[in-house]
Amino acid sequence: MTESYQVRRAATADAAEIARLSVELGYAASTGEIAARLVALLPERRQYVAVAAGHDALLGWVAAERRLLLESGETVEIVGLVVCSSTRRSGVGRALVASAEHWASSQGIGTVTVRSNAARGESHAFYESIGYARQKTQHVYVKSVRA
Image (cartoon, rainbow, N blue to C red; front, side, top):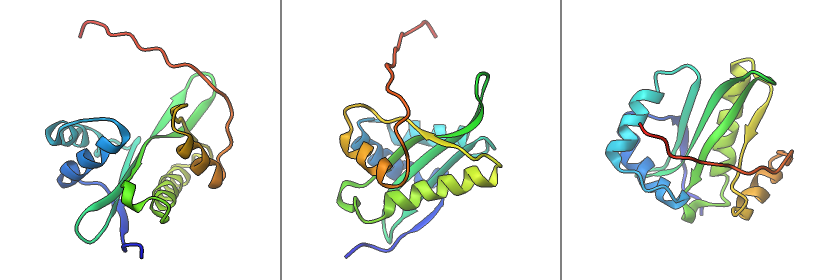
């Protein structure tokens, strides 16, 4: 039976649970690092972070941002989505994505984009099952620069 949960905006007090869940996505950020990022992100109008709060733990989180692209205008992009492995396929991911879509709509933005790592086949099937269509495949290049 699926645990009951509530989707709500994230708070800095959620940092430890968000850090715990982020490990499942392959990102080992400390509670302090997540807390500092939440402090920076939460007051920003162009940022959206929500969690699925269960009885005694978070079951997942979603992060989205409103972007203005020179070539194509405004969009909202889901930049992170994690659902606890023991809770997957229970509707939590759908509810979190729906909350980001609702936020986009409330911002007057009619397009939501998500990028998914090519190695995450399960994620691709999930997004396609909720109405997202693959538009392109791309390569991501990263270079470290002096900070």
